[in-house]
Length: 517
Image 1 (cartoon, helix red, strand yellow):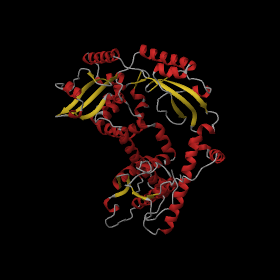
Image 2 (cartoon, one colour):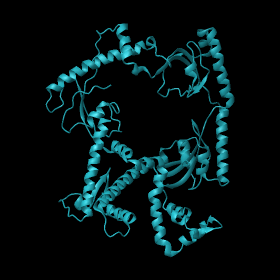
Image 3 (cartoon, helix red, strand yellow):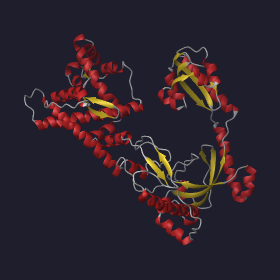
Image 4 (cartoon, one colour):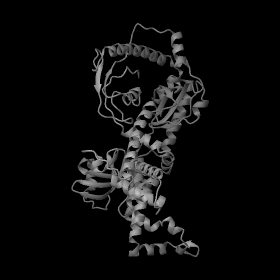
């Protein structure tokens, strides 16, 4: 938070200076700097885009008209407040524009004229002239908007919609907290926009093989650093029973794809079919896969696309993981804009049921003869130290089972990424951590900390000898390109203390050693 406050303070200080410049312009002061941005009519920069004085002036005049109307004299303090508000809104709008572009929130050219016809402005909705039998008459409103005399108003209303609709779609909550203080969106923008680059020396931990900690020392370390181990919830053994895809499952997926082709031929739009049936992430976007050079596609897809015209689709294409149907949106040479529907090969309900039954039978057999069960069912039991705060690699949802599972008992078979898993609880630590279970990890952490202590002392000695160059024997030199608070940098732990030092360090200065793992 310290680096964030400092960065935000600088950022807001710059904004404050811009506000003062606006006030000078407002009162007609002649501000000139040879070769400066001001001389070119640029008064601010948000990210990589400039804010012109002409934009500010236009927005300010509109705001002044709305706020003060035809009032002949306006208090200077009111002018200042208004100019500050206008600038702040311009900056927020620029930031939100960048967010919208990042999220891909765009609209076709004819979107706003159509929307303006279907969504009357509030002033019309309040006017009883447009009501028939107590209901707003949309047809009457549309007829008036088609009148050439209303053209200027209609264009102005479209412009208003262009300002508000993308932000409403972006997120009403986001806009709400921007209106309260503006700080959260500015903070996020600073994290993305403020850039630094650094040089560094890395002193690796020096592991001292002569250090032999006793159990008492390890227990003390464990208790003093208990927060490091709160993530561990259980020690379990597990075996997995894969759920195979058989030929009948593949044929079922192919038949589903044929049905989709029939629906398209009957007049159902491809993007609608993709949204309903596709199991690809593109399905929620109407199957839009973007522009693709078809020579980079698998041979089966290239063959299926031969002869398909724009607006047409392929027959189902069998691939290793499932069946595809492709739609040609447009094409130019080998560059095709494609939409896709993907039907994944999935085991049948009967297959799932039989494999689950097999896992249940294994549990019964294991309780009677562990080694015999492993040999009979051809599986092996592996050990898992369950991390309660991380997504487990098996993709298993334990729900509340771990809270009540007792040591030495099996959990019921659970479906995961690779099939049904059976788990044998060896030590449940959901309520209380067990030092004996974690002893090996505690010992490794203890020795690593000792090694870091040695490296830190070496770094401290080296820092005392440095003047203005990063030089030290036995340390690895590194440098980065420009990075932000949200950029992951190779060899530097993400959002670690190194980030904090980098964004607070005076250019050209060498920091004190930073302890981080």
